[in-house]
Image 1 (tube, rainbow, N blue to C red):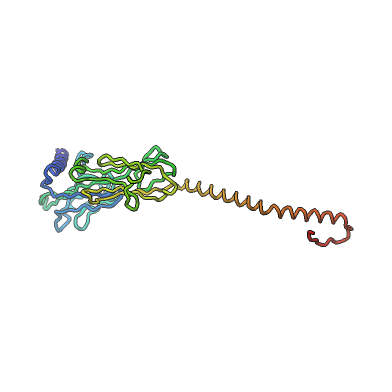
Image 2 (cartoon, helix red, strand yellow):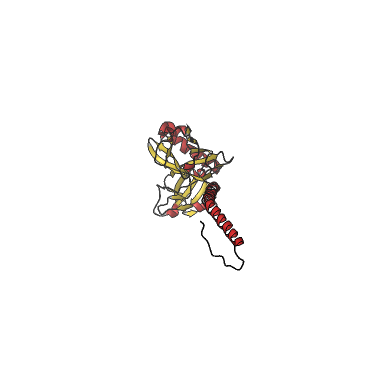
Length: 296
């Protein structure tokens, strides 16, 4: 029964905030990129964080997950090592993942009784996943080892418990791929970009000069930048080693050829000198000492 109540509470919070903009609960929206650290504010904190309780609500769970209970961290959660309670009773989460998105509530208890309404935070996570023609699997790292000449696709998605249509229609959400100087990549025919509300993909064939190149997926609401996630191209060490080895071998071959070309006259000269010396030895008395001669 308690599990059903938690889910009902989460549904009411989202539905009420969508329909009326208010829910009887003080809440914030926080946008963050995966891999970063985030601070979730507790706007109803008392002077002593020993009264603070943090809970996490997600439709992926059958019940609310207790993260902090009266100022003490729950060590039985999967991500407890990434959690900490700030001096202002805020909830700090390290190395955000897309699975961390959802609704977080901060509640105060004094002598076992709740004090005032919850202070909630909706956490929305922007995440990039990568797939390349060099591999059948996909990666979600900000740096992925791939090879020049391969086709790569970057998918940037906003993970949120709110319907995507709400963000697009009501808040003017926009996702955009830009280069490291902030130029919109849709202006470059080299990139194929397609978008569908809260997902935008970039596809291109990698060039040699793309090594260490950075692309960014930006999220804006009402033309205000909320967060961005970066992807940096990093070619594999094996590709670099092959390139270096091939280049070195070519230089060695060129050096050998150059040495052979320039050494040929010297070899011929030595052969002539040796032949003349041999001829003179045959004509001289065996007891005579041959003096060095210079090629005439």
